Image (cartoon, chains in turn orange, brown):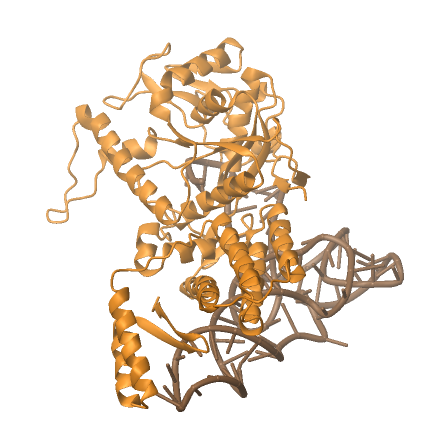
Length: 483
RNA sequence: GGCGCAGUACCCAAGUGGUUAAGGGAACUGUCUGCAAAACAGUCAUUCGGCGGUUCAAAUCCGCCCCGCGCCUCCA
């Protein structure tokens, strides 16, 4: 069953064939740590986490590099204008000399926070995180190379890439140069030869963090870091480059221009872009102010439920954020985990197993359906649908094949491995209070046997107050924590 | 204006030419139970924004229209 992926560059689904057999090199645009990560970031990194996990599951060795833009206008801006003091309502002006330090502080704070929320979402760390400020020399070399080849020019300490020199400019975003020139929204900078030319190196203003370069003190433009760092760690050509839909233009278009202008080689084979998270049908974004940080969302909803919510829509489409949907996801997640528990409970309660009838064709079909869904452009939403069909199958065999340990175990194994593939951990967290609970349950059972339902019900209520829900089943009493 | 995405049940959502239009949530009914709860099961779209067209066959392809959104400026 081959994997088909949608490639933004060709606007088609293509069979996935990495440049090197059984090896995949992927690069994903990471965050600029100047504020808390919001649900939109969560979606992007969960998306590429799934790509990575499924490729690994399929037998590829994946090298996944993600950048951190740790020097940029937004960070500098934040360092100059810290949160106003609430009491005096006056803005404290930070002395220039301290700007660099302040920027580093901001980056550390928000990157740490980013790592924390990613861990909660069960997003695996990339093979390598790479920071822009640790690759200044590489970027300077790149810019020099572009200037030498005539693709870039310097004006008063700034260096720009001359877009018109790169003949294929626009091939990713499907834009034509002359159409864009007439577009009204391109800012005019008289020093640039064309309004579309973009900055490779920015001359430092007084006090701003800066590095030495052949063009004087300054810092790199945004796009160049991705070219310099991705090729350093993954080679001049690699398999996958990902990011949000909003990065297609201009970021990724510019990256292609820079990179291919210098290397003269096709750079990235497959471009993947995830869709946005919307709020009331509008894109969740900083500028609209309609964003919800992951930190805040986790105060209300379990991170795993947020993950399920994010995966319940295909990664390329829009997804609308609402409390109702998060609640639905929590219920769905509970059902998945609950079925795992019920299967285990059922397995444990069988003393003498019936002879197994080997592989169940229905289960095999479901296993196949799951993989088939994932092979179709990482269709996790469809795959989750199959997961729930496995749940229904599991419940049926719990009812029907009470003594067949083998098929119950196989079903549990399927469900477990698929949950893990999608990044839902199945580890059981039984706390120390288990013993006490077991004791109370035994007391209740004794009371029930004696038809002392008053005592039995009281124990049940007491347990409920502790957040324990009892289930009286044919195989005995099962308990679980109220989620 | 250019480029692009979307409209599937009460809500969310998969499906892009052909068996009964996945799945989740809600609701309703039932099973189990001492009673509950929980759990489980069943029911829940002759129909896919509208109108035409192509085809033996359309949610799926084509045309037009309606509605919503995104990118073109920092953005996951």
